[in-house]
Image 1 (cartoon, rainbow, N blue to C red):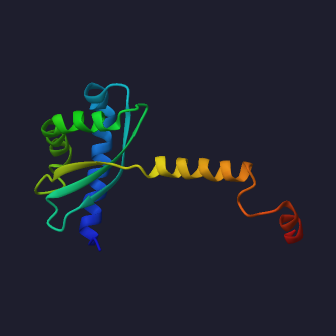
Image 2: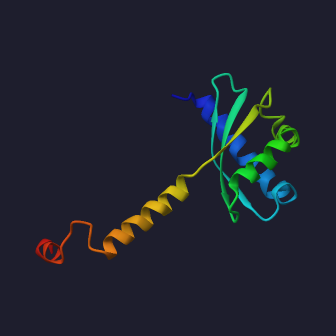
Image 3: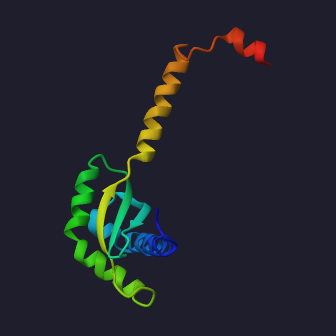
Length: 130
C-alpha cells in the first residue's frame, strides 16, 4: 500500500514526465503517441515505474527501446522540471500498459458473441424483463 508521499511524488512525476514527452517525444520516437498512464514509486522514492500507452504504431517495443536509449536525457529533463519539489530525482523503468488494448480486444469479442447470439440471452428473455 503506497504512502501519501509516494502517491504525491508519483503524481508529480506523471505530470512532469507527460509534459516532457509532449515536448520532446517527437524527436525521440517520431510519429508514435506515447502517454503516461500511471507511475508507481518505490518506498524510498528513488525508483519510478512508469507505465506508458503507445498508439499510432505497430511496434510498441521499438518505441520503448528508443526511450530506453534516451533514458539519461529524459531523466535530466525530469530533474530540471522537478528539482525544487524533490531532493533526489528518481530513476525510471518503463513498462508498456496494455490495459486499453485488452479492453478493446474484449469488447470486440463480446460484440462478436452478441452478433452470433452466443451470449446466452434470448430475445424472449429480454422482453420478459421489461
